[in-house]
Length: 297
Image (cartoon, rainbow, N blue to C red):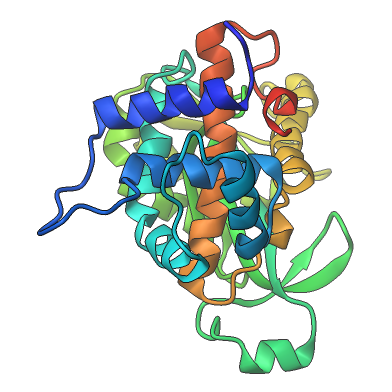
């Protein structure tokens, strides 16, 4: 099977249309179906178009054969923001349809999603009440925006994800994510969750143990060496490489969202693009499941 963007979008369209189906509309159905909308959003993220206006001009010129009808910028933006629940559902369905769904080892981390770079931007932003100031340790700088919390398999397939104010405690956010999907965790016996030192807490580990999840993290200098620590360095690099895929190849930090709804759908759009590539590579037997090279041109 040829591995390219057209093949990926065709497979995704068939998957969405067969498994999820289109939304029932009152009156005349939209000219751009939900399945086509999701495929269009994935293509935008994979091809690296931050501007919706530039993206639609490109799509009119190069993708008109795949998408007979393309909306104007305002219509595309409105449809995309309202499609957030659908995008979340598609991410979950793609994970279910991969070989990684039954993995009992998950890795987790949080990464900054900046939403403003200047004080005037912060003061007039519509993100007030959602975004806040946080510290990015990898860049040794403060930022204003949100944090993306991601729980994925070692292959990088997203299982759980959420956006939260960076002032919130990381353990509280992760505990809330696992509580919301407690049934998902309960189906797996012997679950292991690998994290960094930021999630260290006896109370948090006790809460995870009640859910049947064992937390593996690096030990502090004052602690005894924890079980499984020798393997943590290699595994920890996996979540760092997943974040690098989202930021380096899918331009997570250049989302361009100016409202919480806008930021949420643009982040979901990139998580979906990565999940789609992993799903397709897994189904076609590609040697590198998280490679986007075949789809970014």
